[in-house]
Length: 332
Ligand SMILES: NC(=O)c1ccc[n+]([C@@H]2O[C@H](COP(=O)([O-])OP(=O)(O)OC[C@H]3O[C@@H](n4cnc5c(N)ncnc54)[C@H](O)[C@@H]3O)[C@@H](O)[C@H]2O)c1
Ligand SMILES: O=P(O)(O)OC[C@H](O)CO
Image (cartoon, rainbow, N blue to C red; front, side, top):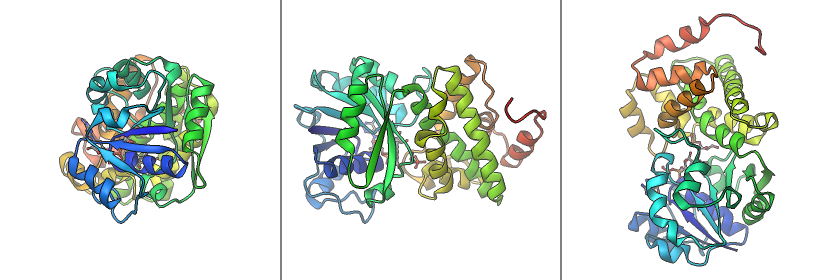
């Protein structure tokens, strides 16, 4: 199978490695010529995956027409807020038979669209040619061939199977799923919960607090997902609880690290600069809260993160604010 990966960041480069390990003929497209040259000639991407040796057959180019010619699969790993503007000019280059897989974990500002919806609109693809891939997938661990699993969801079982086959290797195990809405929401909202956990840890709080925020975070994600038509089984699975555990616990997570820095007293701009890479939870928090308000779902942790990141709520007020909420039954 021939594949293209759009985006030479940490996850795009890593997923290209996964595809190469699975036997695909794969090329990356990026906007930075120096990064593309380093991947092609030195088999490294030092900016995003320092010290990792990439497969020798992996190539990268700024020439989208060359990278996309004749491909069967197009994987997209661009920051969510740049996806639409990046993809629209590439629309005519996508082969008529190709399927697209979104690797992105965010919701678009101003439209509140999930990434598969952005991909459909920007590339003019029907939903049955689109899949989303999400799970406990910290790029660096996967680039080191540490074993992990993921979820590939599509409204088309054939498309889900095709993508799963394309990326299945000795260290990377994809499970298929038909719940695109649930899998995408899990991936986007867990980043916001990871920021909240990071803030708590940055304030010096311990594992009880972390477990509380993760567990109640999963309740928020589940409530929103169910209101938007997702399947209940998705949330305790790899894309839900699995990814929450990885992202909220790992110092490799940009969202978690950014939260820690905010908790320690950095401003948002300072934390973004110090963290590096894309922490999707920062920009995705507002559209997720808007989505929730539109469907009448309460998301107190998300609202508190929006308060701290975007509305000047002091970090020391976050925990008291959440704990002062009216008491209720756990399942209510
Ligand atoms: N890093 C991970 O472990 C990981 C794992 C799973 C999913 N994701 C998701 O994958 C997506 C990409 O994350 P990443 O880790 O690769 O981010 P990154 O910050 O490492 O890289 C982003 C890449 O996109 C490029 N880019 C940014 N704006 C662009 C534009 N306008 N046009 C073209 N290229 C542009 C950057 O140059 C960079 O190569 C995010 O949605 C993230 O949530 C990341
Ligand atoms: O570095 P983060 O916070 O974007 O998290 C990476 C992945 O999404 C974990 O599955």
